Length: 391
Image (cartoon, rainbow, N blue to C red; front, side):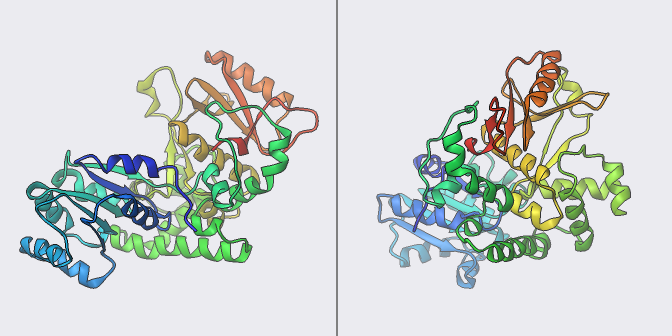
């Protein structure tokens, strides 16, 4: 059964653009599935799908005479005097592909739709050779709204800034939200009910990333050091990212830690958020915080407590609505997330004390729009947003 992703309509609309459509993201987020669904929806017979994981297709794109590629397309029934829709999967496999695509794009009426598993590689490949000719879309793991679709649960999608706790909605959906927070949103993980299978799949995904993507996309030599860093980061969610401290705890040099963090972010494993300040020039100099882009990966990497899993999930949920920041004072008081003129605090079991504390702190920086985001149902307090109502 096919479950439609939220990004599909945006991608379909871009098919009418002359620009190259590039879909990137982590392994196993469903890029190939979306590519094939887009192919079905094109009302033209002049279309073709190429999988670069096949050796014969890879050899075709290693041709030095690019006109031989056109001849091959003709042999497959394509008409080069009409618009061609050419879908190419896993472009990171072929190092020669940017120059091939540039030549074909500039000389023929071809609409390219491409997938690749890493922004790190795509940015380096495409920055100069295809400048101005492409638009890159990122496919993330499932958000909670998509998660429920995959479970065949019908829900209404609530717009930002969401709505306060609803007991009926909570009772209907809370077991699904608990699963989402615990195991994340990789499609194949979501579609299995077995906890053991979920764990095996997540282990396989992170192993593939470390031992396949790392080796093919970077010159990182010490894989074990990066693995050590990942495990440390997983248990430090919500803490300030102090490079010197991480270097000391891992035994990895500061410069190497910086390089590893950049690589992890460029390959969609982690996301860093900045501090909020009314002076933008000071934001960069202050410590960032780091979150994993999928809770399942985070849980596999370390013995993560339930509060950290929940905060990590909320960060990713808010990222669907903008780029959150966090607020911190010298006395240690903090606000978890600032987004679109709202101050949010993630608390598994929120109460009136948490609300008053958030209100006092928010007022000092000029925020009147505040909300607690909770995970559990509270008998004597309902003035909060339930995490499961955030897509």
